Length: 260
Ligand code: COA
Image (cartoon, rainbow, N blue to C red; front, side, top):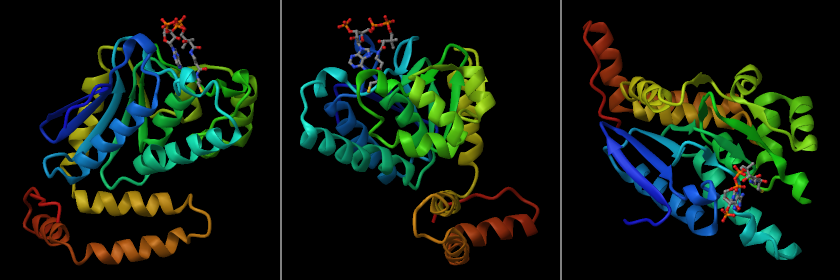
């Protein structure tokens, strides 16, 4: 598939999706959200892709937010639809993807940009990154899951302060808060993400998909995460990867997983 606003590159089982609107600091307009959804759907179906990295083009921004020019004239109904559609099409979709998605935060991650990074399974930032949810400075609140995922990741009090002040934190503060897992130089960001992605890709992808499902269950209302873990644990015993992983261990060799 060809895209106008994103670049997709696969290398050695790792697919990098780059949001490519540098003149607009990679702001998420409707088309970019749709393209990201389509590309992710395609990568889930692609046997060659084991891990996905999402980043922004240029040296300044990961994503500077939802595209303000697109919703500035919206009414109540349109605003509600914008958030509902975006959450379903992209943010919830990423969080529940069966393949690991890493956010490589290479600069500003504001509003929808930070919400995108938070929907990813974990985040790595370069030392120039700046993160925040400045929506209240525009008279609105985060609508792509920010009010839910930020407190999950950094705690309620910190999330309240960051959202109420419309403030920004730098990469080291984000590391301190647990919002990102690692901070690198700008030059080291992609190699570092690829190194972790490579380490992930040596493991059973079917087991990783099950782990994502079980971990996410902890954050879903009305779902018993322990029960989901038991179910997913049991299902693993019926997979080729389980037979291969346990046999390889007992035979003192490296496992060669088929992902089935
Ligand atoms: N939506 C639409 N366009 C955006 C945008 C967004 N969220 N963020 C940046 N842009 C555009 C700017 O309008 C500008 O376009 P132009 O050159 O056609 O005027 C271009 O990207 C460059 O941004 P600029 O503001 O000139 O860069 P800067 O270095 O002075 O400031 C930021 C960088 C990130 C501080 C500033 O762009 C900003 O505050 N952006 C909005 C952040 C935000 O509120 N996000 C939440 C949205 S819900």
